[in-house]
Image (cartoon, rainbow, N blue to C red; front, side, top):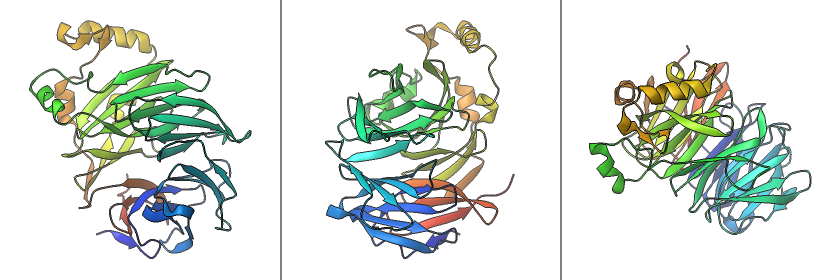
Length: 352
């Protein structure tokens, strides 16, 4: 059974984040923002102006009292020690912002919006310095750990992109629909295309996961200025709204529109360091049948490996998942789940 965090909101909770001190922030519809202590007790509340939905909340990695929030087309910087009007505001987007990301040095912020744009804000200069772009709604953007100028993004154009802040064009792009395995399942993609909803990068910075509308989870490995798909598996019966790598290497949480939260161990497939990624890719291409090669890229994941992938833990949450967060409370890892209700659900994760 889930423990419920209540009293912070009156509207559906849309997003969650936690700082290095264990303080949790949540954003909800109608401009509601709340802070929670580790026990699930509200520690602060704020009504943001215009009552626009709070779609993303991100703590500064360097300063745990700084909280960036997106509401409508606006980014607000708040001081959690005194939740009053914003310390600063940035107006860099023309349409509603879906996701915020701050790099680990707290020097750049990325804001992905409904126009497909990703606006990069220099937090020292306090202005937008670059605009990156998808051809449809950009749903998720995240900086890579240990690489403060590198980020990945995905969107409803079914594109996953790798960027470096020095360049306006992506270093590498993959279309999830073109990566689909040939065969009977492909026909269904016309009716249920792999619109990309969520991204998460593992702590190593080279492995990242993507959740999509077709219910599949795809795992990619970055090598230099490109990335390739390592594996894919059917994660949910409906769209995968959230993916989240846990601090431990290669344990992945996923949340879906089917009301389930699943825990996966992908370490057996991606946890082994590659001494020579280029040679490894060449070897896999050589071993693959001709039907799996397209544009000199490996585009098919072995079906037997995908079929064997089963979750290590299934949480029957029962409601469409808006956001998931992993945090440690009283020495145990917990999963916090935001859904269509005004409360936050807390689940205990079993120990190793």
